[in-house]
Length: 335
Image: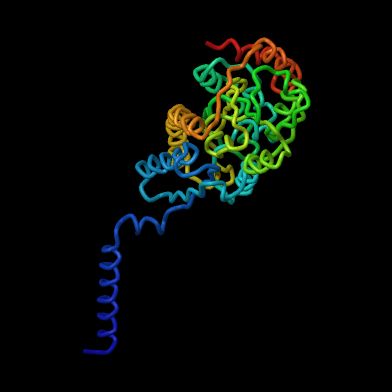
């Protein structure tokens, strides 16, 4: 037998062993080598809806396209605050996240229509607005700024949080207040005489603790999630703004996908959004149980007409930005 034949047989035998070895590796491990990574940033802990939604989306995508994507879900704001994450998504280093509409107004001011105070009655009203032509227009504008938005989400209503009980708007005059870094939120609290200061949510606890600010507003879920009841123990149930948000993918990442993959990821986000909205309702209940157990208190607002009257000028100020008073009134009147 010649040496060359021996070498060929050895090569074939070695190749057979290599193939057999590869087939012996579990399928999910083999697929991982070919999976496209999706880094997802979540501001909240693993057990909160803001993170759980992405595990749900990952499951849906894996079922539809086994092994195509590997979701790297990073919780606890480890990749930065909301604005930092959005900037990273525009650059492509983060592929997906959630965002409040308030933050997105930095790029698409028209999104502020969903943040107008006392515009929506309840969660069903918010849902109808997000599924209207106004919602579709905002999705198009956000895509133009680098954010592909398959679905809107509802973080729940925002409420006033303070160090001392506040039932009517009068005590807000002269109070230093943390607000979302958004012109609308600044205008809103200025209308009550407060001194608004834009502070990222991850820095808010320290700002309240050290007296930089003495009040803020937030959803019940996030109030408990960030343990803010330790520094602002009173929640006035104003429901002044329903905190709409978006599920988004980085446009830079999105443009690399096949139409099939885009369809799967979009459908998963829509299903994930419905899952998130259900989780928020349940989470608000458990969150307030956590708050009251820790000594937090719920205050019912009085002088409701004064709350509404103080907020309505924001509609007039923002009307030119969000598309006119006619569009605002259209959303206000949705069934």
